[in-house]
Image 1 (spheres, rainbow, N blue to C red):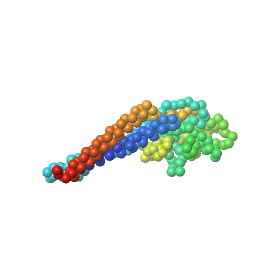
Image 2 (image 1 turned 120 degrees about the vertical axis):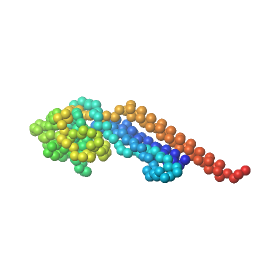
Image 3 (image 1 turned 60 degrees about the vertical axis):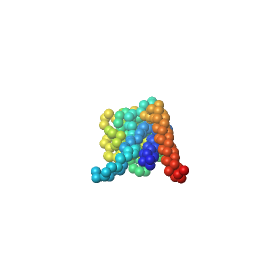
Image 4 (image 1 turned 180 degrees about the vertical axis):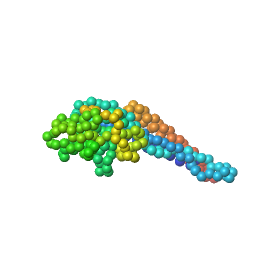
Length: 247
């Protein structure tokens, strides 16, 4: 009876974590460059120890564990904005940015220029070029981004965006918002990674799919909760009957 409660509890914990991930996806439907997350579950069998000499071997118990969170790196829809500092990526690439923790990566190309004239993300991180941060003078205008990432202004060529190739979502780890850390060194982007100026990449979250998953997970959580409650009532009833004095 205790085993059933523990198995149910492990399922509830996994469902609760999945609800958090889905809710985060839904909350970022309109976030530029956001990539949907999903949980990966794994079966955990207990006990691990066994012996053939036992007259009645232990029955394996199957628990569920949320092993990891995966990224959906598929491209989101492009929206043409006409804003000169908006940049979108076509292909499996990422922008390199400088953060207090070191070099990180993003698909959010809604750039700005800070008070120091540096090209930064909407979170304030410096956008890196092949030669370091990109800096503009106070009088520079007509900033443009070529398809290969070359950045120009009224003063001429300023540099080239540092673009990296991402061949698999497993190469990146989300470290908050739209920022990723590389789990291994990324290679320079291939020619199929192109820059689209005057546009941004919208979130790749499918709102209808995520809301359907939200309802499904909620129902599963309620079902497990009902099972645990019935099991608890059965145990209480058994204790009361066993503790009652004989008539």
